[in-house]
Image (cartoon, rainbow, N blue to C red; front, top):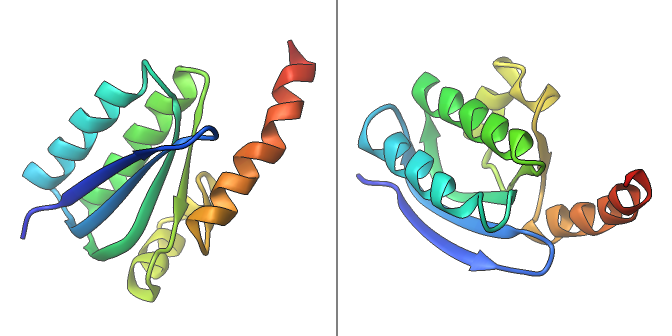
Length: 123
């Protein structure tokens, strides 16, 4: 099953809702290509994983690559809505120590809102 991705732009970040499997192959290549398109416009990205039922090492590697691309562009990647199986994989691989994960997209958006005053003061 291919990875279906829907993009929604908000003032805080771009939300990519994913449905399917985040596994090595076309799925991860398509996610990387989509993020590469989005980052010049908005390097603040939320991956809504509510529809992702499985992730493998290729998917984990892709999340690391997407996170690095966002950070290098001055933004950040946040995750939301990971099911128990996906969250367990992210935890075992220690990815949750690097990429922040939230229960809901709204929580991740709120985190971006709370980060904005810090960025303004850092300038």
